[in-house]
Length: 391
Image (cartoon, rainbow, N blue to C red; front, side, top):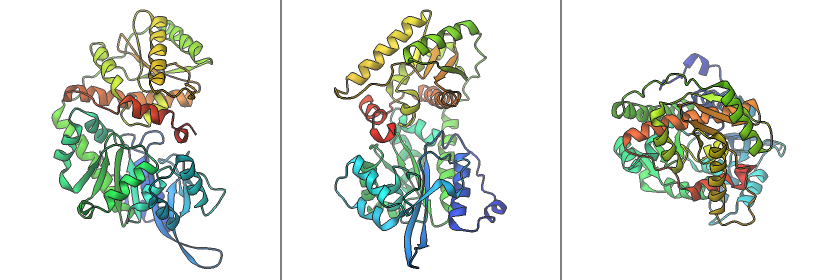
């Protein structure tokens, strides 16, 4: 993992927010750190209001913007004291949290801020970075992941158990930041979720993020030999077209299919087994459902099995008022080692393909580390059908 900081480019930033946008793009351009909306950043400063009074403000990445390409327009300014007051509450419903964060916007027409805005507000630093780094999450999701993370990073990196993003995470983070351990910490890893770093300067926070992510990748490279290259599967294009048509019928609309880098056919069974134990990071369930379809010699039957498995997963939640999503796969493993994604648009199919590729690499690495223990289905289901993620 390469540190992309360029002092000449950074010097072009006129304001702290300009510098925030610059370092955010560095993080967002590396798919091993941030993939399709995963991760967010923030900056704290002061802003004079209409009456000439300085206000404490936090600029938080807004939902719907690409961290890798956005400028300052991708940040929503929020009243910092208002967010800190929210963090003092014992409980706050999802709907109330969204309403209160909207109320804290300086511009009522601005885009909705990240659901982790309160978490960012809590850090006593001007710059805060949050990524869903593949290497860190691969280790976190591996067997004995918590112990491995502590062995790799030592006491200067705090490791917190998974809780749902939003207000639950804000309360957990508040307790962590008030603990004695935080005074010596350089980063916080959220199990199964991602990494937080911070600093008084944009470069300090960015350098910490790169160092944390690089250490995970370096550790993996010493424990697992390079994954064997996989030749392109010789799947008949007509078979792919028939599979896409069958997925489209289950989805109730035409679907586009994209290729995903394949895997050795001999690994398909193990990857299929491991993939039933959680996605690389919880947000991937939004893009690709909790598991892929596994297609053998009878594609129609395999898709019926997938639909039945997905319906059973939803029903085990016990929510009779929940409206299930269409039970079609967003990606599929084929018996010859080929992998395909499916989406209603080319953009959606590409996102699913990229997410599938990240999950495949992690699953293959974890298999060589002894196993995979991602989030259980209750947590995945809670996120997949969480009203804020659906929005």
